[in-house]
Each structure stands twice: as structure tokens, then as C-alpha cells.
Image (cartoon, rainbow, N blue to C red; front, side, top):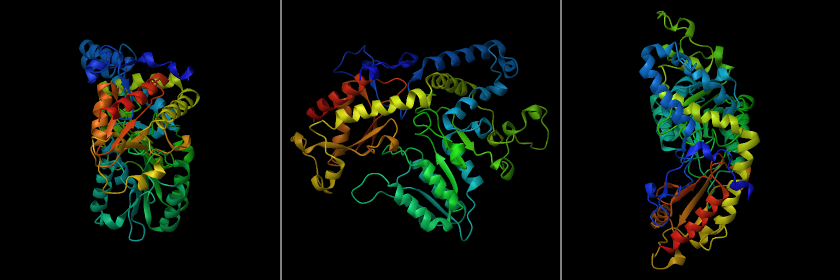
Length: 448
């Protein structure tokens, strides 16, 4: 654990002070215990410097910055600096990646392109309780094609008494209903439970049945190793403000496998997807860039791209496979080992018996409140996240525990009504912070 207390890239990030985030029970000037990188990553100092630099270029060069940039980042080509770094994290080729847009807009763009229902093959397979924005998109896409979402969308849920999906259950549905499924679309890492889906086997099974396979990588990119090209995933989308630390509402991206470059050219044309060599000649006919970057529509926010670039430079220095993933596995396991020792911990398989539906919490009896961990225990089935379900559910326990944690300077992510997500992020968190979180969780229970 001593090795885990040294985070080589911790100094690259800005930590809020306890006093700024409601840490009233701890020293106000000390850095908070930030375990919320799966919701919003911390500010990279390189991003802060690069964005400030772009402001200065804007002031000194104005419009000329598009073509003549004092630091070699001409705005016309600024995404050329981030696409190779994104490709490394995705296990993709540079031409398969485009830094652009926002997550849900990109999701609709990809579904408009690749979801082509027919009377025989029209269904969409996804996990139950996908992120709400994805659920809305799936429903609206079904309606757009004149389909009944209740018939067209297959939502897979865990078995009774379980919290995550089994690989064999997913593959069984693909095998049984494959001829009727047009699109298989899962999250790489499920936002609520933290389950890392078996992406390679799902993609392989989907392709074997003739289905298109896409992925929402919002909680996967920068968190777990990916090999999209080799896995033969058709397409993927992501945001960049979580593990990628690009800042609130940061620019997103999409991936399209190179096999589609000639078979499925972009149908939704925009001038930033046009051939850069003639883009500013303003020709009347759209000539798309070959590959994913042909899907670009409008010029990207230079400030947002610069912010993402600062973080991606840190990732490039750290290395996902060699440095970050092994550290992530050990750090998450360390936090888990501490949590399961808690007097308030209940093993997942005991939850149904000990907390049947309808049970309520009595705040005067501390032993009635507890928590379990609904994230898989297997390292290859999760990333840097542990989701804690507070019991009894709908008893108001989570909200009170969350306030208690915050008073000790522990910043985690609430998922109402009953889950707190803790993300020990490999780039900047330490074993000491995991220990603080576990200790202060105990104290938060005592405040109930």
C-alpha cells in the first residue's frame, strides 16, 4: 500500500480545499478527498495553462489564429493534436476517431447512420437502466422509425436478487433474438453499477448474428483499456469530462471502424467534415474527409479542445496499460477491502433476506442502516468505481450519509435515491484517500 500512496501524476491536478466543498469537520485548508472523477474529473494544470494560452493567442492574433498560431496549434487543425491521443486510449486508428460535438448528439448521429430497422430486423438491445440520456435517445429513435419502443427495445436486467448482468445472459439473448436485432448498444462501463461489460465477447456475438454493435464509452474511456479496432466494434461515442478531465461540458467524440469509410460515407454533411484542403475555398459540393472525421459538422471549440489536450498529455505520459490500469485495479481493490470490513457492510447476497421490500430505516437505531457494494468484485468486470447501495432502500439513508461524508471533505457522487459512487482514480488518488473515505464513512453512519 505504500506504493499506492505515491501518485506520480497527482501534482498535475488541482484539488479543491475542504472548506470550499463543505468539509466543516476537517481542516478547511487541506485538500479534499476527491473520489468523484467518474462524474467530473479534476482540473489538470496543463489544461489550465493551455486554455490561458489560447486566450492570449485570441487576444494577440484574433482570426489569424486559425492559420498562424505562435505555438503550432492552428485552430483550423487543432483536433489533429488530440485525435492521436484519443486513438491510443480507444485502441483505434487515428482516422477512426473524431473529437467533436456532445455525447448525446453524437449518439443520435451514429444511430441515424447505423440503425436501419427492417420489418424482420428492427430491435435494439441495451442494458436496463442505461443512462437516462441514452434511454431517451433509444426511445426517440424507435419512434422516429414508426416503431413502438416497448416492442423495439430489449432492455436486459439482472437476475432477481442480483445487481449486475451476467455475460452468459447477454450472449444468450443475442443468440436467441439476433436475427431480429438491428443494433446492440451497451455502455462500456455501466454508470450506475460500475460494471465493465465484456465488450469483446458482446461485440463478437453481435457481429456473428449480423447485428451492428455500438458502444457508449462515457464511463469507459480513460478508465479501462479498450481495443475497439481489434474488437471490430462498428462505432462508439463518449464524453470527456469524466475520467478524461476535460472540464464541465467538455467536448465529446466518436469512433467509426475504418471498414465503414467507403461503405457508409457521412450523410449529415457539415463544412468541418469537408476535405481540409478545400474547406476554405467554400465549394458547393460536400467532399467528406475519409473516416470518422468526415462526420464533423461545425468547427470545434478551441478552448474545449485545448482543455482536453492538457489532460490527454498527462494520460500519454502515464500510459493506460503500463501505468494506469494496474494502479486502478490495486487502488479499487484496496478501497473495497476497507469497506467490506465495516460494521455497516452487508454482503450483496444477504441483502434480499435482511432488507425485504418495504423495510424502512429508523434513524434512532443505527444498526438498521447499512450498505452493500453492487459493483462486481472481479477486477476485469469493473473499472475505477465502487457503487454503494444504502439500506434500507428509499429510507433516506444515502442522503444523510452523503452529507456526513461531505462534512469530512469526502466528495463522492450521489445517484438518488440510494447509491453513492466512489471512484478511486488512478491518475491522482492515493491509498491514504481510500482509507480516509472508509474511515469517514463509518463516522457518517454514526451521525445518523
